[in-house]
Amino acid sequence: MGFGLIVGVYGFNLPLPKYIENKGIVVIFDFDKTIIDCDSDNWVVDELGATELFNQLLPTMPWNSLMDRMMKELHSQGIRIEDIATVLKRSPIHPRIIEAIKSAHALGCDLKIVSDANTFFIETILEHHGLKECFSEINTNPGFVDEQGRLRIFPHHDFTKSSHGCQHSSCPPNMCKGIVIERIQASLSMEDQKKTIIYLGDGLGDFCPTLKLGDGDYVMPRKGFPVWDLICNNRKLVNAEICEWSDGEEFENVLLHLISRIISIDRNNTSAKMGQLYSVDCKLETMPLPIAIGHEAFPQALPVLH
Image (cartoon, rainbow, N blue to C red):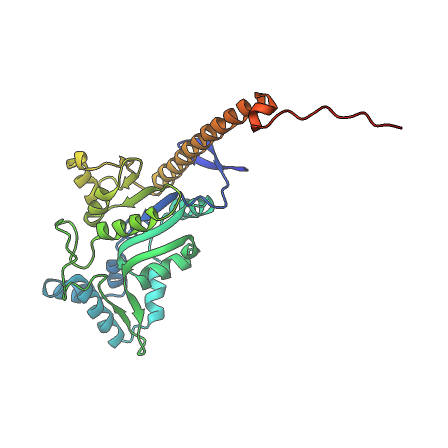
């Protein structure tokens, strides 16, 4: 097994094993204000000069319906899907976050996104930064371009037909991230290898999934943001280890440090198990052959006549 150096983790060069497969670590990211340093919906609306109309309509309809309406208004003004993509590609993202995601993927971690943004915004930004292929799964509100070239945005859960059933006030009606996490956990439990989850987020909607994490999991709340305040006020409800971060540099440092720690623990556990097996093998090797194999001793060989 080879080892590589990840530079800058808490000021050290940490050796991290270059696993081809290390699906025992599942890293789940929020997107807005976690991977990118803004709210993607507000970023597009502001950059395309539609803030005033957005604010006028905001009290009149749910958020997803509002964003779909805004895309209709922008389309009617001649704003093309290419113009929206260009704006998205300018959204702020810390270079160290890009490197952290690439490093986690290179180490074999299974990366997923659970976000209240939409597929078009997320995929456009990830693809622009060469990150799209790093993620095995993106859970978010559907966003696609229709036959007229207009971007359509719909809720992850159609709350007009039924409630998603979560009672936490921090979960918006269109998406309970906690339910998504439970589905992911159920899927992971069907696999042979034990999984460790690292969850990163910043907003109110990231509190419910935090409560779904268990002992041995980790949550990385963004310090000074709504989820951090909720966690600080309800620490007894959180079973996962809490590892906060504030900016892109800390994002990278903390995430890669946790991955290194988990890999080290797994490697030590594996070594201990191998040591136990080796000890048993040694005991067998020291047994007299007839006893060890349960047969009588072989007769002495006859001399060969010449």
